[in-house]
Length: 174
Image 1 (tube, one colour):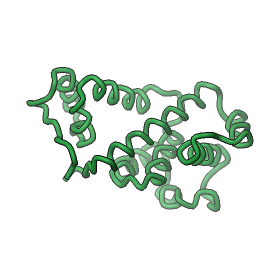
Image 2 (tube, helix red, strand yellow):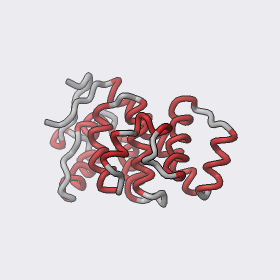
Image 3 (tube, one colour):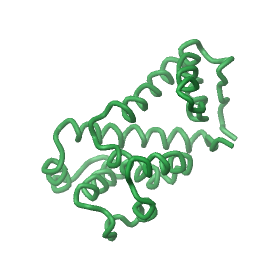
Image 4 (spheres, one colour):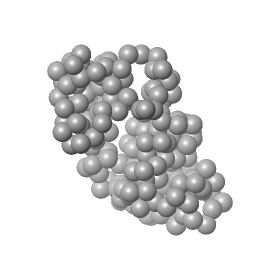
């Protein structure tokens, strides 16, 4: 059970109610993470907006974005994050074998050079914060500046998401 209240639409701040209504009108359920974020109406609203922007408005290939998100969830041992993004990753073009091998990506033959660059960068940003010159040079030779910034924001955002989920013990939907 989550350590904080999950805000339901009927009890939510009007800004959060609007977001919940948009989610429902798109045919999606209001996830527990959104309900927890609803405890802080203004920050929660912008937190959800940033997540939507990352998922829907970026130029980074969805498969690479999901690879980074899954790796962050894997490193953080965030089961909720992992469980939510496996189907998204599959839909974005990752294979189940790749997803199964994400923990051992650096010794796997299932990832191409671009995917390895994303995974290596994700590991360094998520674990060390700082990135080696060697890793950044590989990234810079593979991606443009917009993609690098989006990848970095994605890694940071989903690191924050994982921390929110784990610290507040947000449970998967039943």
